Image (cartoon, rainbow, N blue to C red):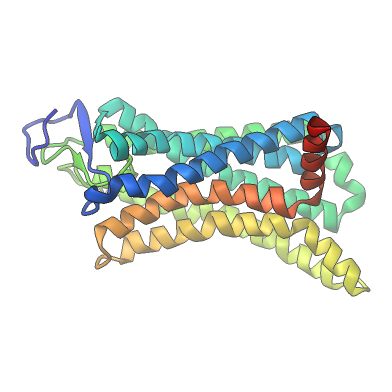
Length: 315
């Protein structure tokens, strides 16, 4: 394994991941909170999946979508964190070229799927609050399954151009990536070619696709809020709004860190590189952990089922 900054290759057999540039001496300490967040995300999301599977009353669209989100959280974090831990703990920095492309694909794929699931959850809340009489007949199990399949296919197709474009570029400068995982633009910047297509496609996904999801989510919640404010009593308004409060918190936890990282990547040229990398790590690890808190703590039905489960086992 060579750590040289220059090489004569056209298509490297592997890349070298530096980790967090400038903070190599504290990699082990940085790994502690990251590993803790990963463990919480694993335990929490597996618990949610277990509870939803065990409780027949949870076999409804809202909990199906929460389960889909939990699966995406598990896949997204697992596609990146083991590689980070290899760097932080064992200084194992080499990653095969094809493995790098695969990781890049999974990151974009699962992120796009999560965005699609949030849009589906917003539609579910819209039907439940704005048109409750048609909710059960519209969002049947068959329809929910079709929505889930559409989300998977949409995310899979949307993410495919990222590794394909990266595999086409020639690399003749360096194989060293100043990052903890194969982040798309960090890899593309190593190419000795005109990479505007990759950059433009990334912008297209950010504005046209993710932006479209946000637009539909915002439209749904505009209608939901309009209906809520038309209710007669304050208690009814608060109770109705409480049914979608967890979803709103999860949306903010997902989109705000990504928006911040995107803006910083595009416009924060004076921001230290290690801060860019830390933020990129955080937005992949923090939301899956927060989803546990949001749905496990704020959703009373899940709390009650979890308490009954432990009470039954402890008796």
